[in-house]
Amino acid sequence: MYKIGIDVGGTNTDAVILDEKLNLIHSVKHPTSEDIESGIRAALHKVLAESAIDKAAVTHAMLGTTQCTNAIVERKKLAQVGVIRLGYPATASVLPYTAWPEDMVAALSGQYELAHGGFEYDGSHLSTFSEAEIRSLLEKWAGHVESVAVVGVFSSLKNEQEYRVKELAEEVLGDQVPVSISSTIGSVGLIERENATILNAALFKVMAATSNGFEKALAEEGITKADVYLCQNDGTLMSLDYAREFPILTIACGPTNSIRGASYLAGLENAVVLDVGGTTSDIGVLTGGFPRESSLAVDVGGVRTNFRMPDIISIGLGGGSIVREQGGEMTIGPDSVGYLISEKALVFGGDTLTTTDIAVRLGHAQIGDPEKVAHIDQSFAEKAYQKIAAMTEEAIDKMKTSAEDVTLVLVGGGSVIIPAELKGVAEIIRNENGAVANAIGASISQISGQYEQIYIYSQKPRDEALRDAEMKARRQAILAGAIERTIEVVEVEEIPLAYHPDNATRLRVKVVGNLV
Image (spheres, one colour):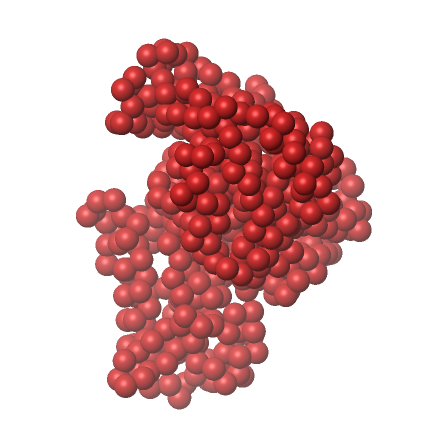
């Protein structure tokens, strides 16, 4: 029995094969292609050919991809979205798409309607919900929208109106027009939750192409019986059907794959993880074996959202970052030779000075031809190396929650450029397989489920609310592909809402389980 894990990075697409005991059988790196898909196919073919395993014995295949992130950043391949906000007239002063980049609004069509409905913070009706009104606007949109985003005021407290709109949309527009409902995607906060829901609705075509393409690539290699999963951004996996419903959950899955892979390779559940790629470095925190989640609203492609995202800092420092000295000041990046490092870097016969060249010149890395960087002045190289150290130390310091020195797990193909000693770091752990930690993280992950809702403890006792949230989180995990008997609670978060007079609390429960 074997598992295949593939992770698409900005520079390389990594692929690994693990056996049933999660031992690494083989790993490869292949330059990430411009279209992403051909790079995935090439990495998959290469790892299978070089390992020579029995393809019939492959039971699971996992993919971590940047395609949804790229689609948002590049404004390409996005669906035409119709947005229905239940909250008229109370929310008319701040309309959907407020503060969005104009080119993003144009890419999504900018269509929206404010309809009656929604709730007050105590669960009473904001205005009277009208099925006739919803049906009328859906009929107007028939043939003009490719997906629908439904957002209700305080739907995190009561979401039955959102689900009814979804039923009406499927009835009027047909089941080929997917519907995203905000209570299953974002957190408390109408505008940010609305933004996240719109993005989710916009990504369904991208995810359909990605999931179908991965299945086809596996089939072409003779892998037809494997269970197929996509990575989500909390360091766990989800089934293809679940990914097609919640494509936004793949955003930022790359760094979380690396964090999970680092946890596995180092045998640690609590540490800081630094993943150094060819262009950027991502710093995250392991808490109980999973990536720490951000508690702040997150900007995605210029759009402010509040859906679940990992707490990650990215800096323009990688193995291909370009090194310059201008006016006596040393600069590292943020521009990089990226996947062209094997052609552009000095140690490979190129003409561009990179951080990898600096590491080789100082004897900290054995890559390429050291003779090709022997001409670099020693003091210049040391100055550049100090700059690398300072950038790394500053980023790590931002992730720390105390003044104590931390344990740092170092992974990624560009990790050779990081100094052996850093201020604020007690120990640096490296692993010989750290260069493919991202693909390892993809292949060893579990399935998660998460549920979040506002409960009023004066109306529903705390114990009953906890059981209800856990049951719904378990249901999410099962839908995503988890074995029911293996599911366990890994995190419970309760945040009282100070402005509510009846002891209302935002309750979030997260569970994980093993693959089917």
